[in-house]
Length: 622
Image (cartoon, rainbow, N blue to C red):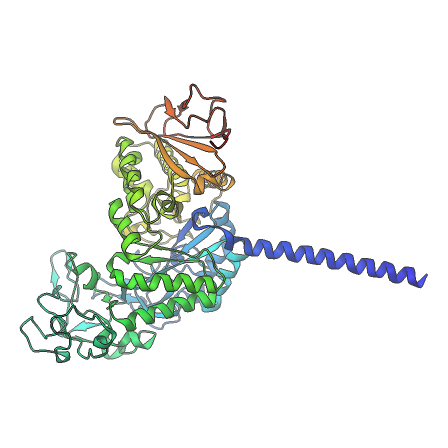
C-alpha cells in the first residue's frame, strides 16, 4: 500500500513537472517569438508620448520649478508639453495592439532642453528633438524604470520597440559672439545663430577667412580636412567661422560630458540648405555636431550601443539622417547592427529619415551611406497625388520602377516604412480636404481607407501615425500633433474629427471608430497572409487617365496574391494581367471570381475607392 501511494505521488509530481515544463516552454516561445520576425513583417505604430496618454500627472512639469517658460508645461499652448508620458503609453498597449500593430516607434524619450526660443516665440521640447542628455529619460515622460517597464510590457505582448534617435544635432546651447541676440522683423524673428559661412571661404585651417590667421598650426596643409585621427587630435580652436561660446548656466548641460566641448561642433551658423550646408550648418538653430570627428563617431556609437544593452530595444529610427556625412553612417551602422546581434536581437531594424520625395535619392542612402531601410517619402508623395489629388495611377509605376536602385533591389524595398502622413507634414485626412475642400465626410473616409489599404498591401512596412485611427486631421508640425487624451489646447480642442461625433476635448481611444476598425481589419489580413508582407511585387495594371492600380505579390511556394485598388469615384470593371499559371482564385478582401477570365488575365469589379485582394491556387514550379 505504501509503495502504491509513493508511486501515485511520484506520478503526480511527474505530471506537475511536465505541465510546468510545457507551460514554461509555451511562455518562453511566446515571449521570444517576436525576435524571429523580420522587419518586413511588422506593422509600426508611431507615437509622440507627450500627446498620447497622461499616466502620471506628477511628472507633467518634469520636476522643474518655475513657470511654463521654465518647465515647458502648458496644455493650452499648442507648442508646449501637454502631459503624456511613458506610463500612459504603457497603459494603452492593448489599444495599440488591437490595430494589428506589432512594433511601436516611440518619439525621442531622451532628456531635452525644456524651452527654447527668444521672448514671445518660445516653444517647448514636447516632441523630443532638442536633446541635452543622451543617456537618460526626459523627466516629463517619466523615469528609466518607466521606460524599462514600457519595453518589457511591449515585449511580453510580442511587440517590438523602435526608438527615435538624433545624431545630427543637439539642443540649441552654443551661442556666437558675433550675433548674441535675435534679429526681429515684421513677421517673426531670425534664428539666433548667424548666417551660414561655407568651409571654402572659412576653412578649419584659418580663422575668419581663407587668407586669415592660421589655426591649429596649419596641420592639414592642402589635404582634405580631418582625414586622420592624428589631425583631429591636433584640433584646438573652435572659431572656424564664428566665435562660439557657452552661456555660463549651460556650460555643462549636455551628457555625456564630451558633448560640452565646442570642438565637436561645426559652429558655422544657420544652414543655407545648399550643398555642404546640409551637413555642417545649424538646423533651425540647433547645435550641429561635427560627425566627421572620430571622437564623435565613437561617442555616439557607444551611446546607442548602451541603450540596446540596457533595454533590449528592437530598432532605431534615425532623425535627420540626410544631414550627417556618409562616412559616419558607414562606421556607425555596421557596429550597431553587430552589437544588436551580440545582444540576442537578430532582426534589429534601423531606418533613416531623409525628407525627400525622389526615389533615387532615397536609394542612394542605402547604396552609399549603408542604410538597409529609409522612410519612404517618395511613396507618400505618390500616394497623396493619386488618392487625394486624383492623379492617374501610372505615377505609381514611376515610383516602383526605381526599386531596383535600392541596395538589395526590389526584395529589400519590403523593409521601407511607408506612411500616409506624419508629425512633420501633417495627416492624410487633412491633405484630402486641402485637395478637395468641398468633399463630403463619407468620401473623405473612403479615400482615407483606400490610402490605408495601399500602405498595408503594397511593398513596404505599414506605419500608422497615432490618432489617424481616430480621424485626426491636423496639418504640419504642432498642428498635426494632437492629444489623444482630452485636449484643452486652444485651436485644437474644438476641431472636427473625421468619422465621429467626438472632439479632441474628449478621450479618443474609441475602438468602434470606423478608421480604427478599418485598420484592424487590414492588419488582420496582413498578418494572416505572409506574402502580403514579404512577397516580391509585380505591377499588373496602371492607367494614364484613371485611378485603377494593381500589383501581384508572389512568394517562394509559387502563390500569387493579386491586389487591385480603385482611386476613382465610381465602380470600375477592368481586366488585369496575372501570372499565366494562376487559374483559380479565392477572395481575401472584396469579391474575386473563382477562375481567371482567360489565361493570364482576371476580370475584377472594384468599388469606388475600393480594394480587392485575391489569392491564386498556386502552381507547380517549372
